[in-house]
Image: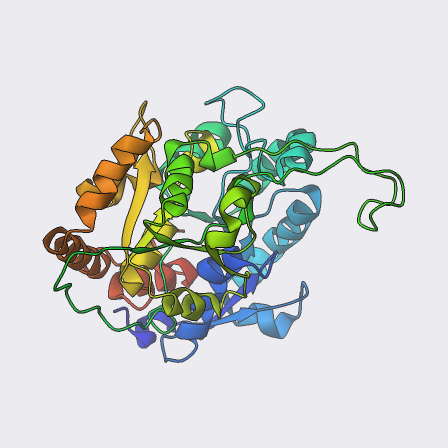
Length: 402
């Protein structure tokens, strides 16, 4: 662990952070780290400010100033002003990006960056010229950019010519994911508990055509919108329907109910979405045997981290997710080899993988592997490797970053 003395040699101890949301994005990337680091003497005090400040007392004490996802003219003007003041105060300018929000050229225009089924697709693609222009301007004056994955780093380097990108993986805080290790199975699972905990951004719910005034959310009416299975446009979607209909699994869904599972909704255990601090407890209370996730092959998903897998490792449920048929860019390429399915896998092929995992010896083997994988690959926020990465990120004088 980096010592507090070595990080505080110049009397600076603040890492000023500006977040753009209160969702899981800002929590996993910044807020959870700030909460934990502030409980110890690490020579850095991360503070999240609700408003932009140029207070000289704060700036004099700042090692670094961190911006979450700067991508427009307003963001750039703020960073530019801080850049002008940088020689006087000597802080480092950082930005964190956890998703792909710009066109990479890796797919057709409609499916590049944010895919059509994501609610942010229309607004992002309408503003793409501005996003590309001002992200490039930000990249050129930032000292360091942190991203979640190798693919996302590669896109920043290719599209913006960035040479200042570091990877800081998504991790989970043990102080929230503190479920005790499960005891090994003594018999095969008969009717496993399976959970899906992905956000509603992985598909698009249909909206019926509405007349003006019919719905207060659409005062001018709505032309209607077809549903899109999005990331669930795989065999895993139909596998869920089959096994729920046949009463072979107990299925739990966190968040909203996807339209494509309406026919089995009376057999689904539904848990409404919750805040980022309560989510781990709600997830662990299910005591699921399996967690599943489906993604399709597009640039947005290639840039994604394997957070669903990490959460499953943390609380002890075997994770099953899909890799891509055409490339090795799926975030779930790192999961246990016996848990991998393909984006082209049929219901029958998925059945074969899943039911093999319900055998006690195989289940115990995979579960133990996941626990050790989390420990050995620094998937805990409290791990020395991750904390050192964050402390180096915040530190003004780190030669590996600035």
